[in-house]
Structure formats: C-alpha cells, structure tokens
Length: 302
Image (cartoon, rainbow, N blue to C red):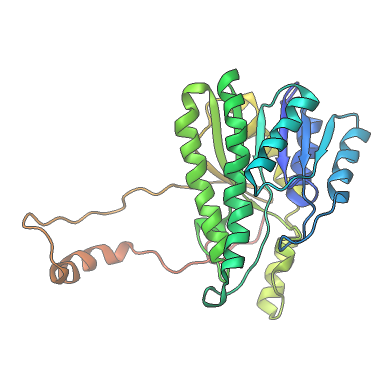
C-alpha cells in the first residue's frame, strides 16, 4: 500500500479521471478529501451527488473519505478545501489538481467569459489549492503535488485557446513549485492524461474522421491514469520532481521541456534585414509544424 497513512486531496473527484485517482489512492491506503463542485462540463451549477458517490465507493470498500463541495476557483474556497483535510484527518500529504471545465470555441469567437471561466478553474484553481497546502507542506518537510496538464497545451489543438493556455500555464506552475519548494522536501509534477471522460465527450463527431478519433479515445479508460498519479504522490517517487508525464492507455510518456534547439550569431549585431536574410533561413529547418495532439500521437492506443 504505497500511500499508507497518507492524506490526499483530489479535486474534481466526482467523476472520470478524478474519481479513479481518488479510488486508487484510497485502495493504496490514503485517506481522501473528495473535492467536487458538481458543475456542468462548462462550469455551471453545482451538485453534491457525484462527489457523494465517490465517497460512498471509498467507504464501502473500507477506505476513508470525506466530501468537500467547494469550487477551486476562489482563494477562500481553496483554503477551506485544505482545512477539510486537516479537520477530518489531521494532516495533508498529497494534492492532485484535477478539477476542470471546457468552453471550446474558435479563437476569434472566444468571449472574455469563456477565457476567464476556463483559466479560473484550471490555472487559478491549481494555484489556489496548491498555495493553500504549501505552508503545511513546508512546515512538515514533505508533500507531493500532481497537476493535470494536457497535450492541448503541450502540443496544440483547435478551438481551445483558453484550455491550452491554462494547461501550459500549469506546467510552468508545477515547475516553479518544484524549484521553490525542493528545499522543504516538497515535490511537484505534471501529468497529461489521455482518457475518455465527460469533458472529452464534448468532442464533435460530425465527420467520419472525428467519429473514428472518438472511438479510439473511448478505449482509453480513466482508471489507466490512476496508477501514475499514485506513484508520483508516493514516497517511491521521492527523487521525481519538476517533470511532465503522460499516460495513454498502456503507454507511459515522458515529455521534453523547452530548451534551446539552435542559435545563430553575428559579431556586428542584427538588423531586421539580416535576420530575414541570415537568421531565419538558418533556423527554419528547425521550425515546428502547426501540429495538433492527434498529429503527434498518430498511432492507435496500445
């Protein structure tokens, strides 16, 4: 039991990936704060029932869990999420930032409301909950963050400027936490899940190509993500921090991070003209295509 006597918060744990992570962490010995507002895929409304179901599944199996129905998108609510762990279980060891919503729309039609709502849950929510837990982790000299990112941000996708910006921002947040809190024994990693969920269920199936893609996604079940999240949260991963992983059915993916690819130099400095004549032709062979996630992960899930 890799998480014996640990206490975890899993946000967005009422359904899908979050629920499977919460269940597996409980099976591995953790007491779990199941956080779920119960909003719609686009972020409206609230419903305690999904979170209550997850808590019921854990307790029926002999585990320990409590529900917190707060939003992650507000500072004070995030403080109360962490307070729930302390009041129920006396400590906190793990934070899994999984809560999310989608408001997909092509960029030139995206509204400020669409932008702010998605960044509010994904990016602000990850910061708020992590920041609420940070003083506890610092004081006890240990702790693990697992943040959900996406290939929408790491690679790209159509109609998801808000979601992609939030998910790539989470990568930067995770790395900054890893750097700032390493001296306190605190770790932080990002995980890109490939799995069928109600959020992925919003993908259109208007063409044969889209329908075929969705059929492949349905084969990737949320329970396949949970073991990696458990490992990253466990003491067995004590030397793993600041990294980006992915899980795609039975594949585990290690993602690279931004580093220089090629440089060009002129002793006399650059002008716009010499950049056009010299720098760009030298750099162009290394340019990246306008790839989407489906272009890069072109093989069927295994």
